[in-house]
Length: 53
Image (cartoon, rainbow, N blue to C red; front, side, top):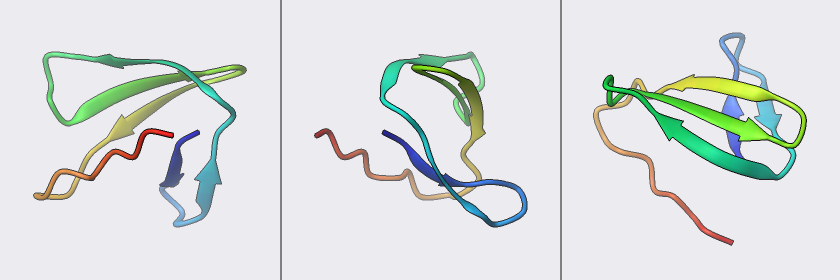
């Protein structure tokens, strides 16, 4: 699962993640879940900690 905030500030929780795709732009990730694909842009100067579980 992935937890993030949408552009309106609402917290979002996804279904189980199938795969994570990267691009040549290090700040953009595509996360494919069971029923959706999310385009995530990392805006912080500090990298977020990933928690596997």
